Length: 115
Image 1 (tube, one colour):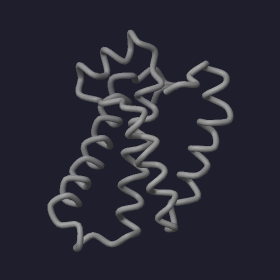
Image 2 (image 1 turned 135 degrees about the vertical axis):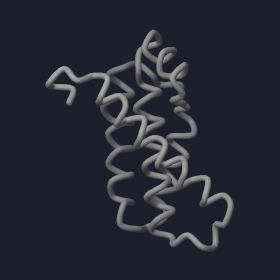
Image 3 (image 1 turned 45 degrees about the vertical axis):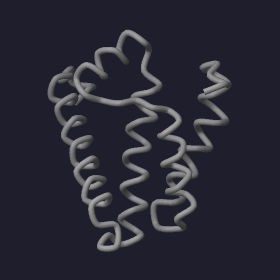
Image 4 (image 1 turned 120 degrees about the horizontal axis):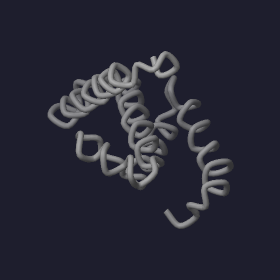
């Protein structure tokens, strides 16, 4: 959708995905025993990925994203991705790859060593 110039539609789909992950996280907080470990791993990965992507936006876009309702806390993103990796479930390798890419490529190339 972004390639076709449909930025509004892409943003709405991104927001819909964000809302789905947060609804799942709310149900996880309300009744953690009823959620299987594999689903907990998926929820942690999804919210961690969203937070990491939003936290990497430039400051002008980040303020717009936060105004719309996206949160971009990089520390929470790394914590959730690490928890997803340590869960040793199906999505754990994807969390490890995302963390590996963040620490080996994004951190040195964007100059974000202390965050």
